[in-house]
Amino acid sequence: INASIIMQLMTVAIPQLQELQKEGDSGLKQINKITRYLTVVLAILQSIGYYQLLSSQGALEKAAATFVIVVSTLTAGTMFLMWLGEQMTEKGIGNGISLLIFVGIMVSLPSQFVQTFQLVAGDPTKIIGVVATLLLFLATIVGVIYMTQGVRKIPVHHMKRIVGTRMSQAGTSFLPFKVNTAGVMPIIFAMSIQLFPATIAQFFPNVLWVKQATDWLQPGASIWASLVFAVLILFFTYFFVAMQYDTHDIADNLKKHGSLIPGVRPGKPTAVYLDKVLTRITLAGAVFLAAVSLIQYWAPTWTGITTFSLVGGTSLLIVVGVALETMTAIEAQMAMRNYEGFIRTPSGPAGSGAAQTGGGTKSYGAARKAA
Image 1 (cartoon, rainbow, N blue to C red):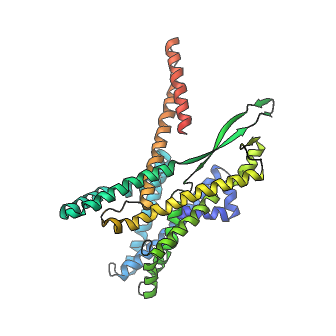
Image 2: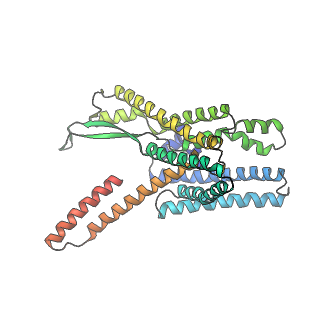
């Protein structure tokens, strides 16, 4: 994940990578190859950090053989998971790495429920806190679903124009902008930046001021640390949206194809209008991401329940996002499979042929809708 994020940033900053991205499948293969090499480098560095941390606490022996075993084992495990995720992506449904993270998060859910109910059994006065935690959990899930699925549709009117020897018909479509365009990336990147001192502290376990600075910068450790975390999320949300949308290119493409937004002049005024729309919906999405990410740190203080950690935060966003993505992929596969069955079915009597045509049209419509 970290290697993918770094590659996204490098693609924007380095012109050569931008050209590779525009080359289609061949360029994508080269970018994926670079990402794999970067993953190996990051895995080695992180393995060294873990070894330094555990050896400083006396959990590991400070020896060359132990160092080699720890670093090679963690790096090999990372590479195996990367390979497994790629195989799941190619032969399964959805993104393989996302599904692995999803399973890793969900596997802890039953034990957290058991610990929470055991807490209530031992102390009945905790029942109010447990109920509040569960209600907050459900409310956060509903909010994440609405924000993930929320789309601002900008109407676009297409004028009649001649293409070759044919005339295209006029019509109206929509230009969709998701409220949460950046997804979970701003939270991950904000956490990486804010927790970077903790990574450095692993290499200096005996330096007191480094440890104090690390503790102070932990998200949720104080109001100021939470404020810094929220500001970082706001910044990276706008940053990732700016990476994904170039309003000037969108406005130019609309103008070239004879399309316009009702009430807005083509060209630069369209780009300015799209900038305003993106700024407003991105602000709503960024504030929501910041609120959800901070809930996981403040909810235990409000409810007094520390055994349930899936209330808000990156984990819940990943779980809901991957679940919605997988459901959409399954629906698309089912619809396309029905449509393929309609094409391959041999024509029968007139009555059955009419029934097949009707079913095929419905499946094709469902496939387009799912896509």
